[in-house]
Length: 233
Image (cartoon, rainbow, N blue to C red; front, side, top):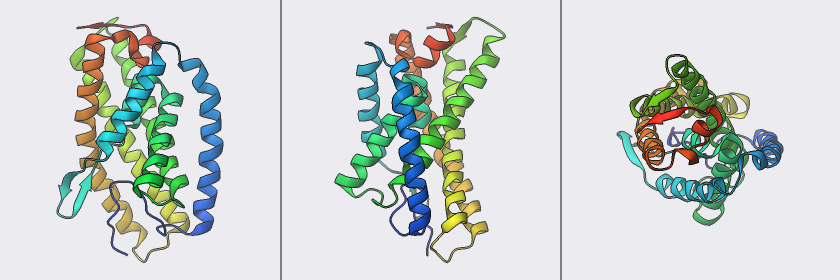
């Protein structure tokens, strides 16, 4: 089996049926919990933004950019969604995008929905958001007014970390029930290396998007609202 799925959308047959089923259950349970917790994140301001975020991520995920010969990547959107609308709403937004892409555009296998949602909507969002909160709190210790370059750096690093962690989620799934002949070591090294590059591209897009929203409507950025920090525009 050639490794041709580094853009993170797994197709059917990459992992065996029992593994797909287990992660399908994990995805359903986790998304149910996110749906309950998202009620606290959504208000009159956040609902329209959540829809826009999902639409934006859907659009940019359809655009691939070259990383290496024969390898392309696209925005995963986990850190971006979490920073703008919150981790639980962000996870639901990514999951909706993945379901639509799988069922209507055959981008990612139907049996692989559970693994794809686990990697991109759960692991990617959680890792990206936790990184953003940690970095933002470190920045807050120095000043109560965060500059745009600092916010952009937080967004960039968070997107990079979220992307790599999502890729490593795939490695774990492949280790549990990989259906291909490629060795785990080769898969791990390839996924980590290529997703560092993909994560850098994602980081740039995330930083530009977050700072653009923060300049015009900082009250809409979930990370800024919850940390109660002023941003120097």
